Image 1 (cartoon, helix red, strand yellow):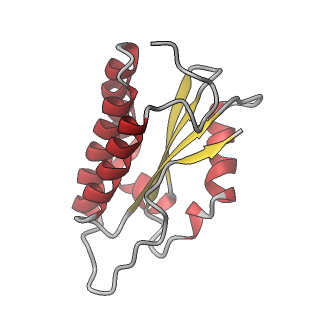
Image 2 (tube, rainbow, N blue to C red):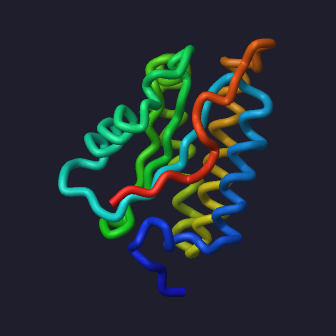
Length: 149
């Protein structure tokens, strides 16, 4: 299937629902937050783009600094997992690399909904390990996919 590079049209409606449901399910077991973001292009390094979007979306302002963003840059055919300070200090780069590798398998087979859902599931499990749900926990970040040009 040929996919659009328009972030709002890249995933099918079923894939979008699958990813949103995966985020909702993962966040039931953690006070952490997960954000999936699609961007059309990136003229700087993907790490810099992820950092800028992370801040622009106020993902760096969660109470426990435990938000994770999965960023797909469509025309560049790249993706990056960006964890805030609270979670990154606990899991280290090896964890992010493992999640990336597992997602890549699905992406290479054009199963982007499955790949994103798998990444969300793995991240959610790790967040739950270090940041269990709190009695006064609120959903600080929308569970819907963010779209950026």
